[in-house]
Length: 188
Image (cartoon, rainbow, N blue to C red):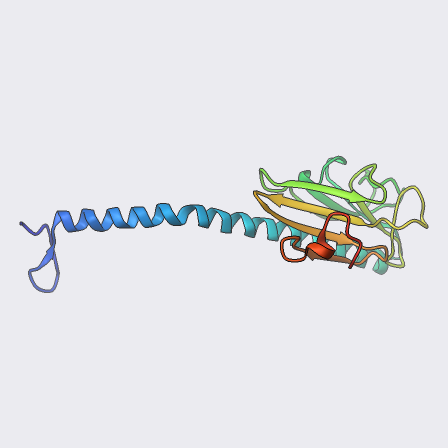
C-alpha cells in the first residue's frame, strides 16, 4: 500500500488505513471520557460557587466586626440566591441594599441549571445579617440569631454552607457527612 505521510527522517510513514484506525480509536476514547469530564466540571463549578458563598458569609461577619455595625449578605434580587449576592452595610436593617448604603462586595448570578435553596431562622427573604459583635441576627429581632443552611445543587452533586447560632459558617458535603450536613442537621 502506498505511504501517504512521509517521515522527515527516512522514507517510511503511515498509510491512510493506519491513520483512520488511530483517529477512530481516539474518537471512541474521547466519547467514553466526555461524560466523566462533564461531571468533573460540574462538580468544580458547584464547589467553587459554594466556596465563594462561604467566603461571602465570612466577609460579612468580618466587616460587621470591623465596622461595629450591621452588615448583611442578601440575594441580589431579594428573592433567590441564584441571582447572586451582595454584602453591604445595612444601615436601615431591612436586608436589602438600598441607595445610600455602602456596598462591600457583589457576586454575579450562579451557573445556569444550579439550584440554590436556603433554610434559615427568618426565611422571609434570603439574607444573613451580622451585628458589630459578629453574631448573626434576624431582621425581626436583634436578639434572635439567623442560623440555617444554603444548599447548592448541580446535577446530582450537593454542597451546603451552614451558619450556626453563633454566626460561624462551614461548608460541607452531604455525600460524605450525612450526619451533620443534612438540611435539618444542627451539628457544626
